[in-house]
Image (cartoon, rainbow over all chains, first blue to last red; front, side, top):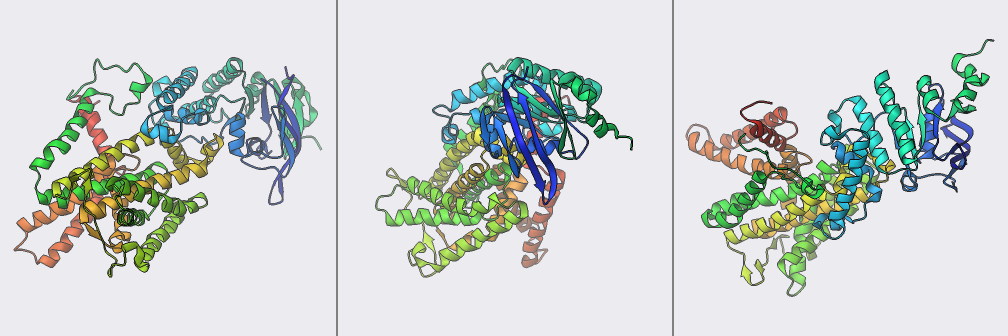
Length: 257
Length: 355
């Protein structure tokens, strides 16, 4: 499956005031793959996502994306290149409706200038309708139609997670980073969310990198698993390879001394 | 059931974007505007125009300006009156120094000048937030007043720093009568309110709210934070600048820099808090509350308590009641009068049922 790599990390290191959060990590994610990042708390999974989409700048290393190499990313630049993400603690725009959140996800696709929008002239009216149509497709896809006009802050947690995925998908990303998309969900909600992630990959060909703690879900969902522990990579391969890797077992279960 | 929506279907995205989707609401708006433009000028008297309607409209516009910045973009500011002052003095100087400058153009240029000053004082917002930003906008308040009193050029070397409104003539029509000044103000405010409504419901409005609600997420999905914040300061100050020019030209006629002091900034902040943050209608409700309630209170007390309480005490009593009412309203409805109005409308739609 992993023919052409979409994302290629080389020797990424990141430290906060001398504390090494990520230590020389390299791995590749193939086009159209679902890649899971797993590891105990504090292993550096979220930090790694933050490096990929430019929230943090790495101390060293190179980020290869879509055939080009970057010394570091800026978050705006990452969005322009087609990297979208969701956050561990939902980072929706709480005072806005579901529809507005999804429309905001399409901000980079908007063609008209704000002056055209203010006077509702030129490209503005047709542009707005185009964006609306695309947003409605995503809303349909994730089946959140009935909450379209609800204010996001008033929705239950599971739905908010889904709206956040909708906002990320609205950008038509090439790479989707999901930081614990199923945290705090029951098994039914997890199954639902997993099917949305699989559908995303199949229907849009989106490459997905996700962080997840539920090993069952990870093994079922992903084509490729990368295991981190204390900022180091301890395992990398298909779910089956990783399951048999003694270092991974040690990191998760501890070793006999 | 007081008004109902049965049979009114939306079939295009364009139609769904209308703010008033029901014809009843649209007709109510058109009737109100028609009444304000065509009927009020004939039935109003000079006291109503000069003391109530004009300040109400100008303060609504100022509230609108601040609400864009604070209610929509989430940047708190106490420099509103300073931007009004810049607009007023700039419009005055454009009128004074350029021969044959059209009145409306000088308003717009005054607004642009205020927008530029607003951008300069908005620069700290890129680094600091919340109360710290509030303090840095205070700098605008004191700096602008100081500059306008220190350098006589701005007031054309008037000994007391006062500027006087030019004759209010547009395309040969004289708008100097109270009814004319009212119509001029109403026209400007109506046009700007519609423009603002378009902006807050457009992509730019969504950018503002995104920055207000969660700025890191906004940056991650590709919203340019710097441009978004500075545009908020610019457009907000533009509206405040025009409000300042109207305040000087159509309401007071003469104004000095200290007419735009900190208490004016607080007054505008109260308007948007009482009216409702992140609402267009709220500014008008809030301004009505701030302008009308003191007048109502003084009329009531003059009629009922004149002989009973000492006049000096009476004035203090009014202030106490005014303050108490503000607190009462904020406890009952923290999201402001606009929210109350919205609830009322929803109730009217399903009346006599409750749900």
